[in-house]
Structure formats: C-alpha cells, structure tokens
Length: 354
Ligand code: NAD
Image (cartoon, rainbow, N blue to C red; front, side, top):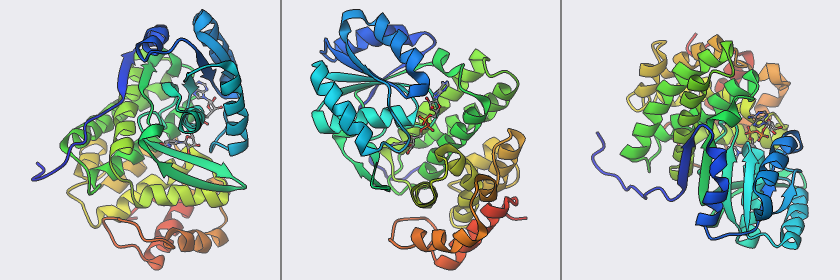
C-alpha cells in the first residue's frame, strides 16, 4: 500500500496477442498515415520484407540496417531514406536495436512510430533513446521519442533463440527490480511488475524445453510489456547505471550484461530496501531477492559472471570509478569501495551473500 503517489497515465496504445501483426495496417491508418517505412536489422530482413509486402501500397520504403546502440551514421542514412521515401511514419520490427532506430528517426523528423517488439528488452514503451557517436553513448528522454503504438505479436517471438530469450528476460526483470524502489513509482507500475515476476518465472523455464511453446511465449511477452512500461514511466538507478558503464566503456553485449549484473545490484540495494524488493523473493524464492534471482539465472542457463563475457579483473577498478563519477538517486548510498565489492562478486559469479 502506497500512502501517496502520482500516476502520470500511460500514453502508448498497445495491441497484444497472437497474429496481431495482421493489424499493422489498421493501426497505421488509425494514426492517420498512408505511407510508412519498415525498419529491421539485417538479421530480420526477411520478416521485414514480408511485412512490407503485406502492407502493399502503404509501404513507401524499407531500411534493414538497424544496429546495436543506435550509431548516428546508421540513423543519418535511414533519415535520408525516410525523407526520400515520402513516408510519415515508421514501423519498427525487431528488438531494442530496431526500436532505437525508429526513435532516432522520429525525434529528427516528427515521424509517428508503430513498434512490433520481437525481444523482451523493453525499449518500445519508453521515452528513452541511447545513441552512439564517435564511440560515446549518450542517452536522452523526450515525449517525442515515445512510440505512439506498440503491437505485441506472440508469434514473432517463437523464433527468439533460447539464449537471447533468457538474457532478454533478465534484462526486462532488471527494469521491474529498479521500479520496485523507484522514488516516482506508483501502484499501477508496482502491480504490473509483480505480475511480470510471476509470468517470467513460469514462462522462461518452459521455453528452455520448447522455445515454440505459445502459451509460455505469451507469459513472457506479457511480462516484457509490464517491465517495459516500468522502464518507460519511472526512474532507474544503480543497476541501469552499471549496465550502461559496461556497455558504453567495455562494449559488452547488452542483454548478457544486464543478466549478469542483476542478482548483484539487487542484493546490493536489498540491504537498504528489503521490503520493497520482497515481491521478487515471493516470486523466485531463495530466501532473498538477490539470491532468488541468482538461483533463477543459474537454473535457466543465464550467464553468471562478468569474467564469462570477457571482462578482466583489472577492468573492475576503472568500471567502479566510472560508476560513481556522477551522483544519481539510489536507495542505498553509493561509494567506490562497495561498488568495487559488488563488481568483484559479479566478476567471479558467486551467489550473492555466499
Ligand atoms: P537487438 O535488437 O540488437 O536484437 C539482437 C539480435 O536478435 C538482432 O540480430 C535481432 O535482429 C535478433 N532478433 C530479435 N528478435 C528476434 C526474434 N524474435 N527471432 C530471431 N532473432 C531475433 O537486441 P535487444 O536486446 O532487443 O536490444 C538491445 C538494444 O536496445 C541496445 O542497443 C539497448 O541499448 C537498446 N534498449 C533501449 C531501451 C530504451 O528504452 N531506449 C530499452 C532497452 C534496450
């Protein structure tokens, strides 16, 4: 029970289900557009081409060069293609990389966005855009960045490889974990995050055995929507800061980095706000939120150590120094020594508290 809160409302329209991709045209026209550009990564070009063909005359162009961390060179090429095509909206089909490109086009051109997420990373509900220029990643927030419509089609997630299914789910859980203690949280977001913990806990283990289990995929995609909404409407803290440090300064893979850090950042903040993180312990067991998430990560084959993704022990001092350089809100005060200890445990991969 929260004694006081502000609920800002949710502005993005959401269409959820199996086979919902058939509703792209209807949703684009609902926004008042008759020419769109379809976006994807090179890997999902086939799906993007099929979608573009199915939209017939609505398709004014297709751009399949989306890349991780939204490099500005790619965005500039895509913006040129968008302007030449005469489109007034983008349809972004893919994970966070494709959604990021759609946002980068929208913020430069005023295009509306219809996003069709195919991972659990959670960019689709947010007003956040991270972009990379000359090797530096910067992040900004603006209402112009938030997509107008999100179409979640469970069928598109059936092809998500098991490894990315697991790490992408851990990436999503990280949004919920930080939402549970966000100073600007509200009861709607907290309820969504509680539900997401249970849905991921039930869905992900089933997908290890059968990645095409449609009911389990529905659980997982529903949970991803809840977690993306949390990321999009309340503030994040230490966990997202550390993931950004490793992704930005050590070029570690996005979803794996979140997955590895999550039990450790959870345990660190649990020392300050155990009650707020109790929904995680209730969902995952293990006697503590950090321990429960580590047990879950291990049981579903998620990577457990920074060592496993190429970080050297000697890098940890620099990572800790970058992480404490600028002040930011976090439920537990941050100091270089305790962050260095957290990173040591995450580098070794030992269960938090052991
Ligand atoms: P991604 O979008 O780079 O996808 C990884 C790979 O998997 C790509 O090759 C993609 O084409 C492929 N893929 C995606 N869905 C698939 C499917 N269903 N079947 C088969 N292959 C599929 O990875 P991601 O983890 O979704 O996104 C990471 C990026 O998103 C990072 O750049 C991160 O910074 C950004 N992000 C931004 C926000 C935000 O709010 N701004 C939130 C989360 C993530």
